[in-house]
Image (cartoon, rainbow, N blue to C red):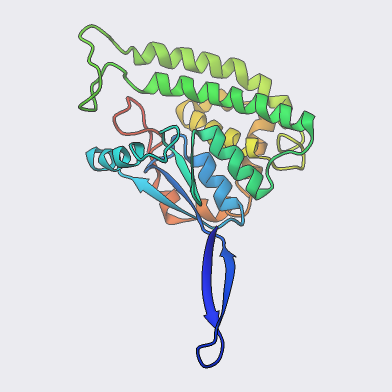
Length: 253
């Protein structure tokens, strides 16, 4: 919040009035879905004022990121990061939880919170495995990146391993969504993480989702939420957005 000063009165005899103005949140991330899209969905759904800066995937965007990264007020430099007043918050889950507290999406019941925390870690674990599958760590993309002369990224092997893991874990998620959202009728921040990353996995391995009625029904229900529905009916969404950066072996626009 910003403190704004104003004066009023007759003949120059004014009274100073101080009041607080809520400043819009600002989300900074690459111009792709990646790890930022669950947070964007939370902000679209919420009534919070927000804006975003999408960094181009390339050297220009990388240069902008370096300026942000090296700023003294960046506690733990990483993308995405959220600006909330004088705070810069990084790390996907920390941002998601912060937005959840502001938007009323954080469970108040201890058992509900515990379930959300377990599922958030499960879905983030799977997303990390997709990242490892899709990005070749032996390719040098940036000037300061270490090089390897012997490393080899076996995409087909990693893809099969990821799909095997996904096929093992979807049956664990299926009963958790028997009543709609993770907490039944109560929407929580975990639903936003689960939906977006499941949607990414569904693009990567659509056949894995066959027969999981609860999971698929959850995803359809989520797509009907305010903010979500309007976004997915828009031209930007329909044009398609990269899940990963184009430098990845699989990025799926």
